[in-house]
Image (cartoon, rainbow, N blue to C red):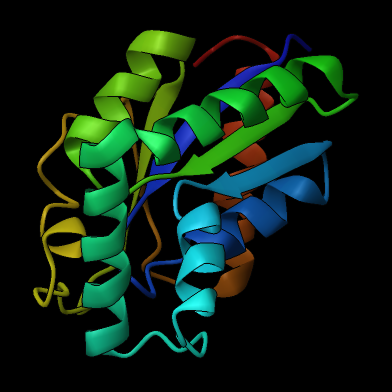
Length: 167
């Protein structure tokens, strides 16, 4: 299988990490987020790792500041993409919330995009990153609306389709 890069998104609790974990059972996966370094910087400022509304807003605002200052989150992702191409991993998942950041990574890397959807899940509107999750035209939409077993089957089917180049 050729190396594949996917930007994955979905509101908090939609199942992004679960989807990636299911894929990693059957393929070598490199999983990163555009806020990995932002979280590291936030911890120096006293952030305790929680994901409450004020924490989400803090991380979103900090990422926006870093993006506006020197595009640090984007440059960090590009370094991770370079690493991925040198690794033995087959699939890279990049978690990105902001539509403009998704577009930059797609244009720079040729990544495809995935939105994980889950019914009856409230959108998070406390910050601009989370509130704009749906404002992008994704390549793939995956519904996480039934059992974990069914969701794992969807992940396996997705993987099989990208391996056979049906997607």
